Amino acid sequence: MRVEESVLEAGWKLYPNPASESVVVESRYLDLTGAQCRVVDLAGREIHQWTWRTGQRSELEVADWPNGMYLMEVAKDGQRQSLTFVKQ
Image 1 (cartoon, helix red, strand yellow):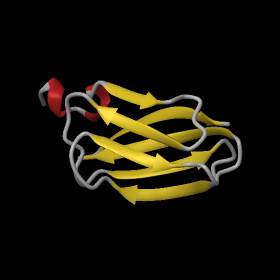
Image 2 (cartoon, one colour):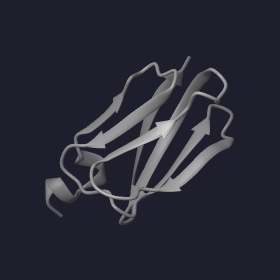
Image 3 (cartoon, helix red, strand yellow):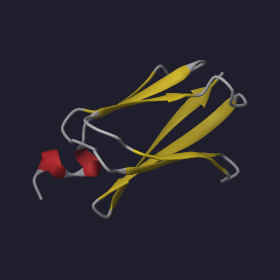
Image 4 (cartoon, helix red, strand yellow):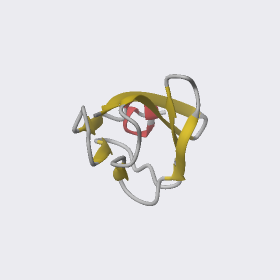
């Protein structure tokens, strides 16, 4: 598998961090169309899940979520990447 095809080596960006209204997640090298995504809190409760619609960028509205630390998981082709962010 080439680097540009690996979820683990996709050149991830997640911003702003901390977030108050929305958080953007981007992959520099990989088209994530169809990837399965979810966000869990530190207690392991699933807060949100979705299928990545198209391209290399997705935005998630977090304004109504409680303040705290969250873990975003992105899975595609049997690979999984986790990114953390703070909602304040």
